[in-house]
Every structure is written in structure tokens, then in C-alpha cells.
Image (cartoon, rainbow, N blue to C red; front, side):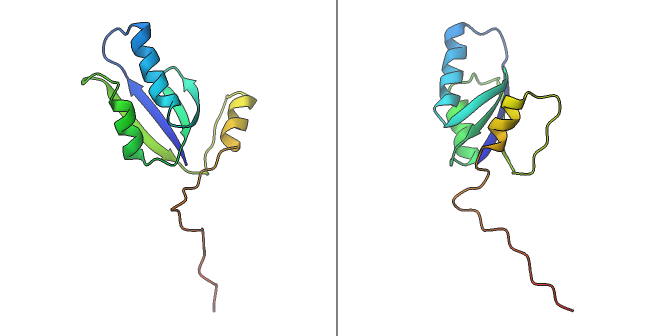
Length: 106
């Protein structure tokens, strides 16, 4: 599964604090920083589990949003490396049901 993690930090951060946040995100799985406060991560963890792991290194007033990205994504004005990274990810979870359609009958 691919998740988008984005956060808004309250107050000034020292480099070691930023390093702990980045390390917590990188420990989740294959990832890359789309923006300094927005990351894509490929992991089998749920949104809640990802949120709990990242929130553990944030301050109480920091804001955090974690959402799962479906395979139906679009992008504009991003580098080929970024679209290749996203295009090469597994957007399915081991627990996802296969996409199926009901048979068409008249």
C-alpha cells in the first residue's frame, strides 16, 4: 500500500528533531520526500499504524494527516523520477479484495 504522510510543525525545529521525524518515516518502508513535509511511503501498515508511529516523534501541537493512495493517482509538473517511483509501487494491500465486476446480463 502507498500512503501520503503530510504534517505541519508548530514552532522552530532543530536539525536533530527533523532527523527523528525523517527517520521515523523512513523506518516505515520504501519512501521518498515529495516536499519537505509531504512523503510517500510504501508499507503494509494501516493508516492508523503509520499515524501512531510518526505522531510518536511529533510535538502535541503538530498536525499530521496520513491517507492511503489508490492506484488511480494523477500528477502534474512533477519530475519523471517521481512519476516512475509512484508508478512502480504496489498500491494493493494483502487484505484487499480483488477488483471484480458483476457479470452483465440482459
